[in-house]
Length: 589
Image (cartoon, rainbow, N blue to C red; front, top):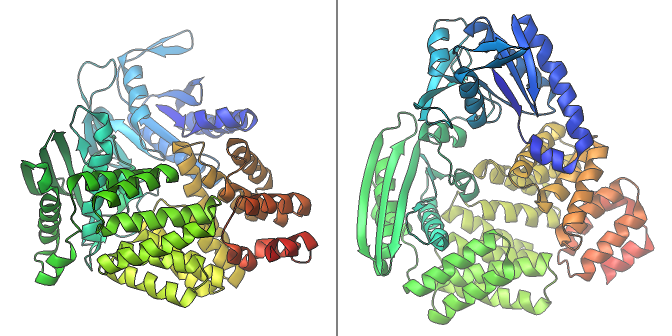
């Protein structure tokens, strides 16, 4: 049996003292459990532990117990791999192919899970409280033959890790990013963009839950069984495929798969001219929706139709949206403008341009003239495509920044009516409602946003904040879920200053004050001029009573042009500063 601490390497790079403390705690947790199940604690390998057992069932019961205790401590997450094979003991160490296979299995195990080889699965199939399910056949490094991998489940057939907390919707789908089969890696944006366009088209249909982009794209480049993806994302269908773009030719292959059985429900191969991309996308969306829902009305067929344009403008739009997702806003502006220069009637490009300008105004100190331009661009998008959720969401964002909250609410509600899977509409509506002081509505919208994008930490943390101001129960439970998601995000990207800065305020509220200040200092070291970091840092220091530091950070943020004064007026985190002359002067200015 091999165990490993999830995210330990990243932690070691940021906080050696805490990392070593976790090693000690991990050892103290596992050693007595291993020995209580007649096991032998052999040695530590970095942040991993290697152990051997006399029987397969002892190893499995020990692994389950270790995960239970680890979950209760809530300090870190483990992944565990187990294999049954012949080994040789020598000088308090153990050798053999069995050791290598167990180590390789542990390396591919999902966080919070126990993966075992087929030999282990076969030996525990009749043991009380143990069941397994097949994951996939895997070729492991330095292992000649492929190994069939199984996941250990509890006696009720449920996963040990809490990755599937909600019931799977009958009509639900995840659109995985289409694989780039072209020779040019730069074409990734094109494949991702087509995937997102199909996602947005299907999102316009009522009674069909479409998983948000961030959640579906978290599986990009990973060799994971579709049944596992279905359970992780709570969907019953998966769309996957590939794209090969060569000159003016385009080949797209797609297949719709049942996530429960792994069987194919529908597939098609398109080999056409590049100019046919819009009809291909529409055909894929229509065929998938029909396969899931049984039929589409003529109105629904019209609903999934996306705006068409010339191919070059479409490519600029896809590049712009990818840059917007990556928060490279100035370059995104350039791409959207290039798309509009080629097609002055392209609604999606105007909506993308408006969103980018609004973000620049709110977070990066753009002048009021930029917001005025965003206002014009959102109106243009709305006039060109009044039936697109993106048009209304963009318009609502701008109206909210201008504190025209009733008008903003109408736009957000229309966006949600058109696309009940729109994370942006829910999230921005929540922020708008909080800024105007409507806490009930803000909590409702942040909750919906967290349900649509189930890996998102921001919506859950802001939900907890709204609940705290209203004096609701279970605030800490909501905040802990939010900080758990933030930790997972930091495992994927340790330099995410948004997760660090927003998470720091949450950690303080949960009483984890030392770590709270460590997170904000890491964020400030990474990007000392980031408006979001300064804004959240000011929250933290104001709550902690460091008024001068909080005020200096707010002054820095406002000097850069932070454009959401209304939020600060409503946020109770600044209550300790309300009577300070510098704070009053700042808001007045």
